[in-house]
Length: 107
Length: 305
Image (cartoon, rainbow over all chains, first blue to last red):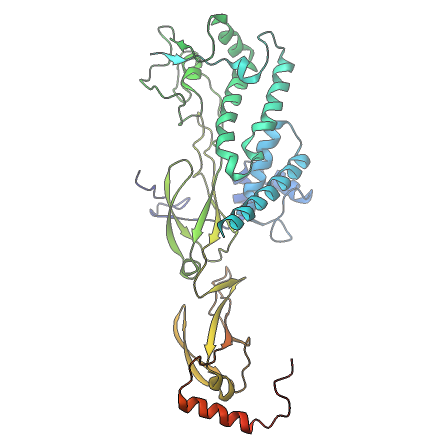
């Protein structure tokens, strides 16, 4: 088994395990999904992605995963972001059901 | 060094004479069927492998230059046949694996168009493709939610990572580890690692939001008369005042002894009273209960429901 990779904290020289993020600022979110802050703000305004506050300044890591997924689907399947949002909703429900099924079987 | 010839037309299921539109349509249909983002976790890995092949075929057949070069190999090859790159080809690695995991394209692809990332390769390609995100479960104990902790974890792609559980994590929380997913191709950014927190069952503690719950078994006389009891909390032993006349199911709250929250405060710990009767009372106990029975000056034979 390979030795575990020690993850370093982003933007600093500290070595050691990376503290995982639960929340992202709007700047971090824009960088995480590869969009300009203005474009991100527009997507929040359109309701395509949700921030945890009213002003679109704080996002969950789950929202980052979701938006990245939507952008991949847009690129690979040629669907628009509204459709990608619906698709991601459905897949997330499927995953939720699958997790529940696994829990039930595990009992 | 021979590599296996890949029949990209076969992968996309189109004839060699297919038009650009037909190729695009075939790709879109296959992408819809095999895109890993459309698959639940259990099918993701298999779909990702298949999607890689589809992407590679589309990468070649959708680009007129690459398609011409590929077609020049002629119909003399069939999928799976050994293919020996011509001398002077950019592909030189003594690498017999079918897929090069570092860049996501097959050795066959590299033999034709150059190993991505190798600068100035003859006929090399300069396409950048971002690495895919990796999702995995992160099992954590209630103690780790309380005190934080480092978890070693083997990812689906075989890599091991060490993660620090941040305070404020709960069951179902998704954690992001930036740029710790699959590496990108040819300078493309790496994917992210997303971890789904799953809290392991604890023998004594139950997580309810930010709060914790634990059982507090009491003898009947402790519940009736009240008094002080010492309980083992996650922070260590704590003396708790039980009020006289405590009923079973009553929740005694210990403020800020629950899970840490992002605002640096903590949830509460609830001790839930359960009254336990002695199964084998001693003779003296029995006599005491008989006395209780006689003096229990209530007319009804049992408490009201």
